Length: 91
Image 1 (tube, helix red, strand yellow):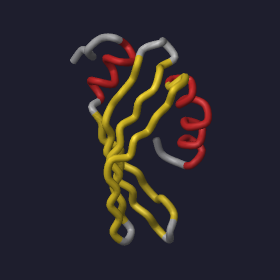
Image 2 (cartoon, helix red, strand yellow; image 1 turned 180 degrees about the vertical axis):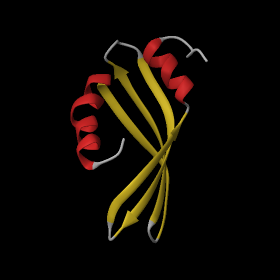
Image 3 (tube, helix red, strand yellow; image 1 turned 90 degrees about the vertical axis):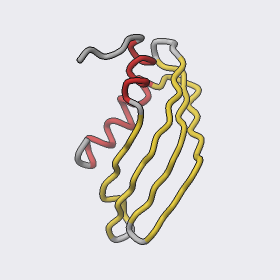
Image 4 (cartoon, helix red, strand yellow; image 1 turned 60 degrees about the vertical axis):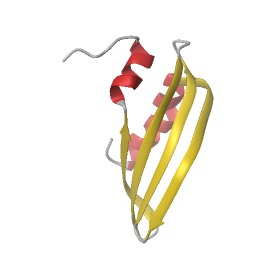
């Protein structure tokens, strides 16, 4: 996702449609140094399809002038796909 409008739409509209209820974010580690920050977290929720979702994430934040400029997100996408769709993605 690139751009403020796209990111805001994702969190305001798409995110709640996928993660329907019981959203829990457990923060494990934080590290910040100047214009960079890293957060490790586990996200758990009940999905719109009723499946339970739990996955670990690492977020890398790049700041400019005290504002978030860029975020890189790392997670096990195959695990997430199985929880959302119930199958392993085909290659």
